[in-house]
Length: 315
Image 1 (cartoon, rainbow, N blue to C red):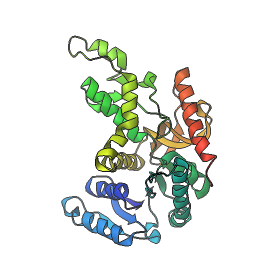
Image 2: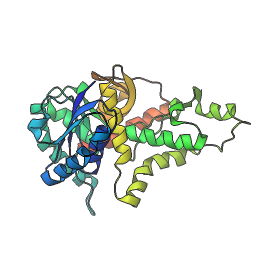
Image 3: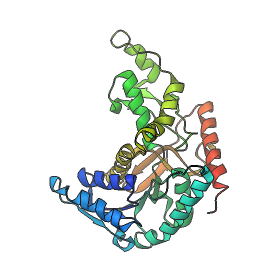
């Protein structure tokens, strides 16, 4: 499928998403990059466009909101990073205000698009966009814990010395400190994780997995990158482009993305990541899977963490 994809925000994340979409067989035939900094966005587009000789033809332009007309997918990455001394609530309100400015401008020209929210804090931003945009909930998807899930699978693949595609493991909850791993859902090559280690004993022996250490790795992975290079953008770009591929596919797939909850697991009126069926029609549904009592409680705690923030911001 050839698709028109608009990206709002030409910072490190937005421009890397544009580059990845332009250079990979992503299904994008037309890319529009929008940013308040006109010179910056023009420079990014020039740099990307000059390399498109090496792939199938793709149009990429530095545009404005009217250029987003008839977009199939709109990706929102706009926002600022946390400044020294700034509280989480202050940062959230600032980025909510940016989103409130963007929303009426983009939905006026692209009312039928699928919207992928990437701006942080992504669960709050997805919730706000859902409440103020008038776009059907099935067409609004926060990137949620799709990257956290990828980091988890990478960590497990390193531990068990097996390809990530053979691992089914997920991160639920907010994209933040209250995210958790529902270990009861984890399997490797069709076997429960602990059983896999037993099956492979004598062929490949593994140290017992430290679940707390793996959870800490997932929580801190992004921060470790930021500490060393100032920002994360390659992995998040890859995860967002994968999500776009799901939206342009011919069938549905399961992903841990942030969408509005309506009572699943006893959670309501908050956007949070659980297993979600996503495809060409957008969000089909949240899947109901059997969680342990402890995992369900962790999901409730994560939802309450987000609701606490929502209660303190001006929508």
